[in-house]
Length: 171
Image (cartoon, rainbow, N blue to C red; front, side, top):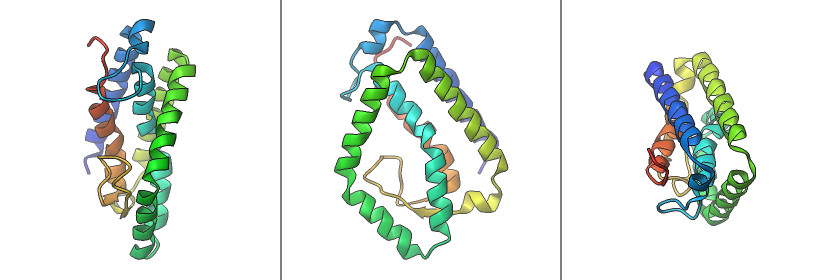
């Protein structure tokens, strides 16, 4: 894994997030997105959420990597079976947070998440980054059947870039 490349892609996403947020009018943020049920501000929160969940995903990978492979395979299967409730909670959470959080709070939260990811990535060993587990592939198109911790650090920027194309903000 090229740590510097991951650091660079995270920083690029942070700059892009702030550019989008800072240059959008309130009306722009309330406008519907292309291909989602969210408005632009709600989708921006959802894009931020990809970075916020890395800490939890990291904990799962480290834990399940130490268990027999059958444990994480069963866990991923279980999560796949509850993808419909997950989708509903995912939608409602981004809708709520993107509706009530002020833009300044979104920007500050994004910055905190990025700083945390940079610090954590710098402390990971090569052995840590090679840890892996099975993932629920129905939860996100960027989740693969098996992912390493290095993949988990790359995931939120893939997620961010995908959703950026659905925003209807001026670029």
